[in-house]
Image (tube, rainbow, N blue to C red):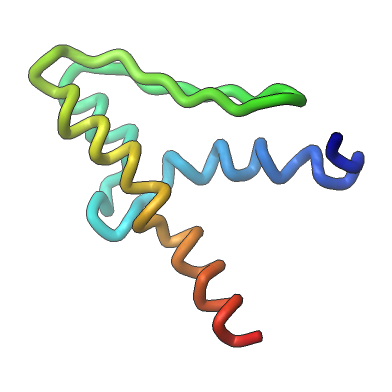
Length: 86
């Protein structure tokens, strides 16, 4: 179980997914919405859920944009640089 001071980090990361990435500078929400879709997320004590609804034609690009957060987000790139500095 998380310590009380750690509860906010999951919620913070939830919000970061909507920020630009190296490959999607317009942000994942803009990609999903460009295909007429919607995207949302929520965090509970046990998990964080990210979900989007999009037309079939926009699924692949929307999924790539969502997945890009885990690999090419400015947020995680910054964390990697900080680890190397230590």
